Length: 172
Image (cartoon, rainbow, N blue to C red; front, side, top):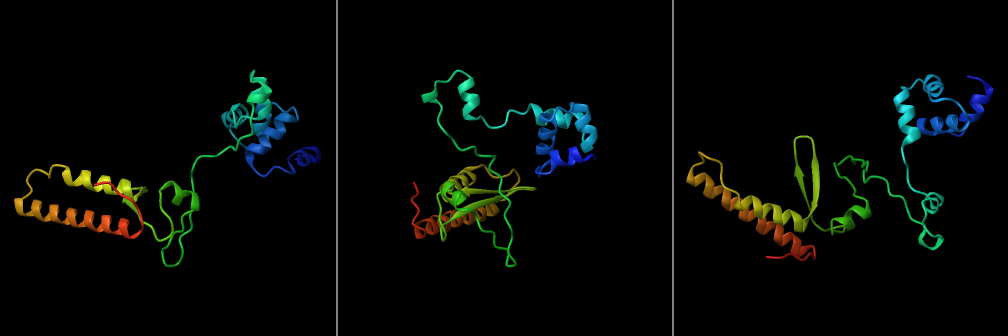
């Protein structure tokens, strides 16, 4: 790598930043791909992705100066949460707020094959009620159906009690 190239890439922390810096320095896309050991399509995607709008780009699109207001660009809502030694996971405050909960409150989680989905206590209550009303599987004995129905009702009662204890409001 030439000293000029090293200087161009010195402040770049990501591959995308390196691609943009090389493009700004006048390197063609194919050369950027070769220098960074990336595919041409990767370089093209980085250079053609729209990115967040800026005040200048909004003004250039014909918006009046008064219509162009500062904004905060929010990336996709993906969180990397660490698991503590006891298995606890701390949720960020904005997640708790979005779920209508607070420390000591209640959140319901659904475990799928490869997913773990958090929902508000209110949504969880609606989901459990819907499951209770769902028809039983064919071939289930009446006694098994009755036991399962009682378990679901008990779970809903427990959930409603926890929501009341956490200060949450629920609709019946």
